[in-house]
Length: 268
Figure 1 (cartoon, one colour):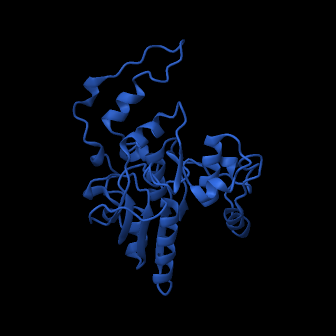
Figure 2: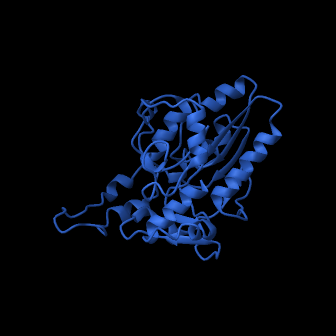
Figure 3: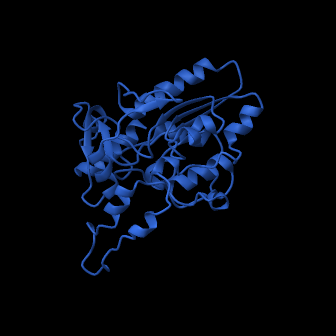
């Protein structure tokens, strides 16, 4: 099961025009669609990130088990309500500090382990189960992927992360002026992954490439037994960061931000 994050529907050339008027093709993803089955009347279980993932994992609407909001730290909520992107006609923002009372820390805002995930179901049927990439269904040990039926979990620490540190010469970064999520992530610079309950470590390459390489290793290692791989890229979610190689391959895109996004898609 391969999941990508925040991809525009028609950014795939098999579904629409593609990025930069179709000049940035997605031939490998297109071939999967053309050689497989396309569900053209399928819809997300929720309009926001983490609850939609909860729906994918459980097959149930996230509101049924109290997970209808995307976990986010208090500092981010304060930034969103600061009015930094406020237009002149917008009403003044208000932050309801009293609503912090009784709220668990963001790490404990997780998918209840009483839910039956696809991983638990397949694990009980003898499958070896592996999760790679974005989880975003709880960061504390009691909610991580290995608590939900995955034998192995190579996971981001949070719902979003840098693809490489901003000062790495191998990467090109674009921060859109009004993209508060990107500004928050870049300012905090989360970088690193964790295997099961081990210590956080820093991959040696661009995150999309790293997750792909690890997924290939999983497929090779488990090809002679039933296995389930949940490969959840954070690409092309902000922060917009592309490899220098992919960025340089698209000189015909004049807009820097669009060029970085297109380069991320090229890598994906």
